[in-house]
Length: 347
Image (cartoon, rainbow, N blue to C red; front, top):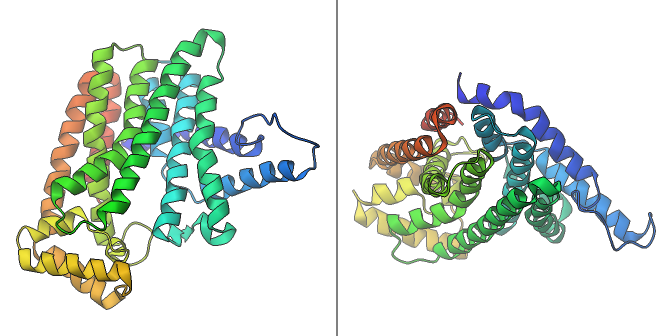
């Protein structure tokens, strides 16, 4: 079975859990401070649910939500806690995307208008805030027999949220770095994307009752998975397959990518020109489509894409080896299918 076939059986339950959360109070958190059923605060709860539901309706692969469900099912673990964990991670991930769209000024995600473009920046920030916090309550609101595990999962997720925010802080600051290096960018990528994958993998190990050493290995695997995911994302941007218009959307936003830095290793003068151009693009003179296309061609002609694909393959191999050894034979089939899927650059 390919990776999508392994995930598909779990998708209806995940979607239902996410929809119920959007329809219940403040993302499933009971309102303790309410005056009347039709007061302004009640309207706020309804609007919050509609805003989050609007963002979630843009779709996405639901990878972070489905991955722990598939891993735990493959290992014979409990389905309800895996669903709760998957829904929590997926909601948090989407909260970071809402904030990311505001910070980057992105008007489209997944080929559809972003939340802030139709509710405003202030309300989008409010929605994103709730999406980061409410899932912690979901993990803690469990029967007494599950409270110890719930607390461990909530701690994992809370830690990952802070790490992900730190990565976003580094990402925003990265755009002002005058002498950017590959290690610097990979560090940003790892901090932005690895932590939530760490919860997917280690959380699955927790639900499967695996020992601490295996859980630690899951976090190591997640670092490689996070890097692979971001390198692949950079490559998809170069191919124009990120649902954000023509190739080079990152360059239009003033962002350096892994393929660009790797191309710069072959043409240091050209790379210095690109860095200088991105600085001015950030300041006052955004790139037009023709200029972006020229830089995309520069990256390709200096083997930036090829070198990035080789790096992607290495990171996926490390992820697959570590995660398979940590999670066991049956979950390893899910891990291998994921690695094979991410090796393909077709959206």
